Figure 1: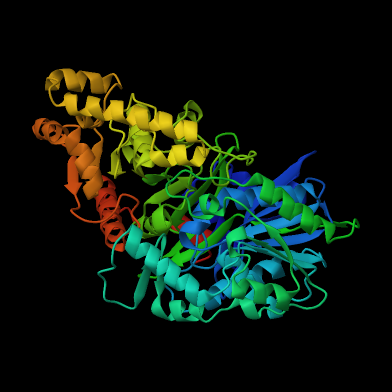
Figure 2: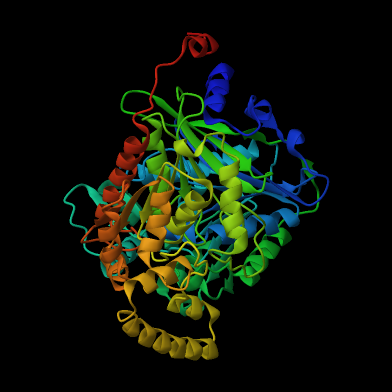
Length: 612
């Protein structure tokens, strides 16, 4: 983190920040970024454990006068992704109550530096909580509260002795027993994904990977023994079905916590699909409780904001840096990744998020792939569409459409901010993110696309298929009955589609009326885009049902035939570790095939700027 200003300036030049003058000084104060009214959100890197950098977001009133600070500790792995917008809404609500609210990612999680499979991961997570609290205290705020969701509550409670005096603590749907939680994580992986065939010192979980040492450390944490200071007010927001659990009862008795019940937690933190839910009512109750624990006196704060950070080091010692950006007139949050010596106008990979999830990819795959590509001299951009991640205010009981007209505009607007021609662009995405990547390439051109487990095979079919999970999220018996009838009719139509002459089928695909894989693949081929496709067994079955093999046989005779790979194992969501490793290799191989290894020696001019 403590690099020279010349070093930072060089990195920003390589990353092509949209406003290099503004970003030439990465550490600046809040007064440079104020708005006249409302709530202000600023994205920043904060110092983490050791030399690490933690991604964080600061939410506070625009006049920077606050009643106190609240540090929000997120869940882990898949729950972190599912609850992301909900925690952002909690931060918004707290800022409206007059607080500085800080959201952050633990070391090795989300966008922060570090490895998720680090044997010392649990110690790093705990140190990250301490670092986040220290960050808000350095602004001059004396009254601090901590709110933790799921494993975030367990981690916050386990570090309470290192946090100083706390005005309040919120344990939201807390994990009580680390040991029971580990059993839950590993069982869920076996049931919903598969057995982990790897025989190494790591354990696979849904949405992540943990070293065995970290699993043991996590198993040793127990919230039922939590004994906070008598001056710390505690709120336990628990599920009604856990009210009589002996561990919950013991935790409530020892902590003296006030108890409230929260509903719809399964749909919030562990939905059955990509359909996410934000429990606005419960979030408002929690923020109101926190507000009641503080007085009305205010302190003017000026937090340090840092937009560039050294996040990784390649095997050859090359530094990988990331810059936090707002693109497309400042509405879309994005992170640019490149090595410190990346050449100007470098080839760029754009990573598209899936459904309503934020930019990190399945089990952090986009983050890790971007940092790997940086070691080859290839820049990466990962970003959030409006209504996802850190782009846009979270609406009440929010549900963001996946491929709406606004979503398509967001993708094209993002591409239009890049200062590289189509011949130096590559798009990567999974499922709906793959469709977005193909759409962007068809509209703006690209050298390469990597389409992972794609299900919508028509660029002109802009409506995602309605899944049972979408209907379940409505919690409506009427909607469920309508869906079952519609599905029966749809399945009858699918049985008849095999009798449609292929030329007619393909024509319907180009019109967006059916899912004809050749219609998309031929469109990309005609544009000169190198296309690599990887399909899990269930996606392969969908591909074959829509006569995809006939299409690739026809395209094999073209000058630029697509590469379609059938994995033969793994899952659609890329939770399976082998699937992710295979996909990561495909992403890197596709980038090197499209661009070559763009890692270049630092120019004489850059050496002078670095003081070499």
